[in-house]
Length: 559
Image 1: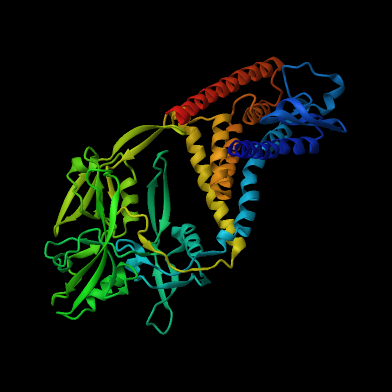
Image 2: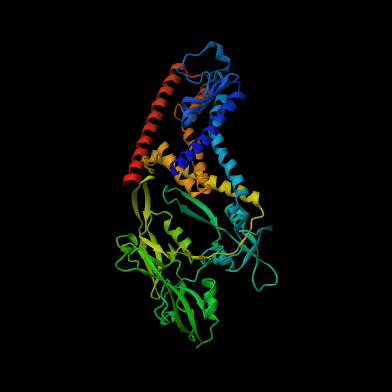
């Protein structure tokens, strides 16, 4: 059954991508009065065919591509004088450029035709994250401007917002020339909304695999509250005397559930001196002598008497604290220890783990100066990330940078906020689509460029067997995964076909552009020579990709 599903997914995937691509060439060729002999989906012997007018339409045996056979498109063939008026090569260069570009253009448009309706109609997007603030990083603009957990952002620069995606879209599209963003904020206990001005901060980020840098604007808050995972950063922390340990999660105080770390701090601060309460604590401990990578989760009840000096003294959130270290990793070699809490990276303070991790990962080749808190003492440690190359059975050789540490490592580090109705559905669909397509296009452009610079290993190239494997894997994971694969392959097909290689669409564009510059056609012998060179290059690329495919299949099935 799985085999049939995999085959069906593969045929649908390539069928849609190829049909859309070739349809672009076909439609523009017809509009340009170029004679089209064959429009074929697939290669080899036709399974189905019909002739309408001058064109034969085919569905062929091998669904590995397709083609549009236009009169005069192959410079190695002798031209038929009767077809000269409808010949591709007889058309002006700008017309040939339009015909060549139409295929990749259709592959660039296809993701929009798929994703926008999907985001509009999919039930999984009926409700989204709301406009409440769950956690604020103390080193970023939101905190400095006065935003706090529990606030609700109801307008940005006067435009009403009710969801996190609307707020994010306005922050990500921010430009410095705008000046500060004016946020209208509802705060518990305040009778009237507040107006808070926030200046978004441009933060450089390095792609973890491809290594390119980009700058994104952020204000430094998260919509979900931090769970009550604690770290004891002072030897005399009152909670430590009660038996609480770093990385414990406080679930309840005297039977009353604790709704996150900020709620825990408020509850502890409200305890009168001398009052004894019962803390319900969740603790993960390694399972010794068996599977060291597994942990046992247990629930404890600990009596705690509030001191006069403050029950939350010596306490911080465990998010930016080191939960595991590789013995041979860069972090251990630098002198970092389990339980160290990272306060700042290169002098930039942070209190949320996500922003600490982003700061460490940026420009990984440059040593990082970490300010850490250990047993109540501040220390400065220099961390140099380690470049590694590992061989993935499916993806090939991948370059990454290793820290050798993990911060708080729990599958549920946040307390999710209630979802709200996604009323502005069309704008949501368009925003999500533009963001997704833009991100994937940027990755693919750098990936293709990396093949020529050596940044990306050629072992990552894949052919039909890899696409077959991926199609089967993704369709079994669900519609979201299969659609994401189709979008990625459609964009890949557009970019690869635009490479200036004779025989590809980009090669046709290059030849036509040269003719526009020199104001005369290239000699037929030159065009024929370029065509043959391109055919050899494409064949070599296909054989190389097939070789990678065979290696992948061997590793996937036999290790």
